[in-house]
Length: 151
Image (tube, rainbow, N blue to C red; front, side):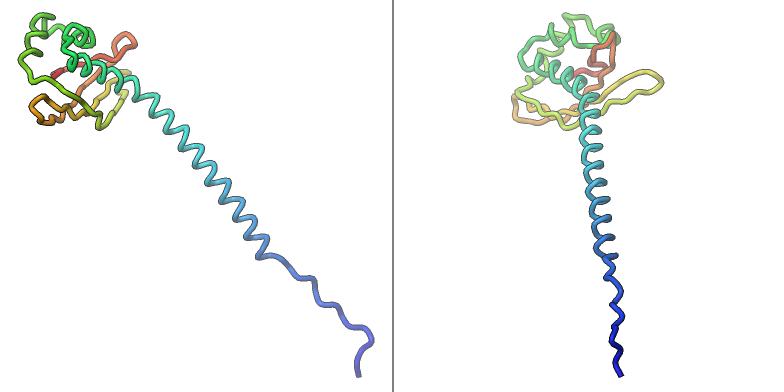
């Protein structure tokens, strides 16, 4: 015998669909947050390294132009103490002329309150030879200056 009343089936649950929607929303939020965080991290690093890179490039550009006086002004006080302006100019004149340069990397560090940087450059000389040179810079009176063996 059949019952005149049939029990309606239980309503369909959309658990899988709900889980997939929640997972998708979480994934979009995480990826968006990571992208935004990465952008601000990149801007922060770029803001820290750009001034040091620009100082090193100004120094090398002055050497390329044959302007030893302008390059001398970009030396730190310790290095200027090792080279008189005239001696620096004479030393630069004896070096192979730099035809072009390319920055290969910049590293800025702060150790015990002393901010320093290294800028790695490929210097193409007039002979065609490419010299890999590391410029060491320190921050003096708020400006980046080239220190150590300048060139």
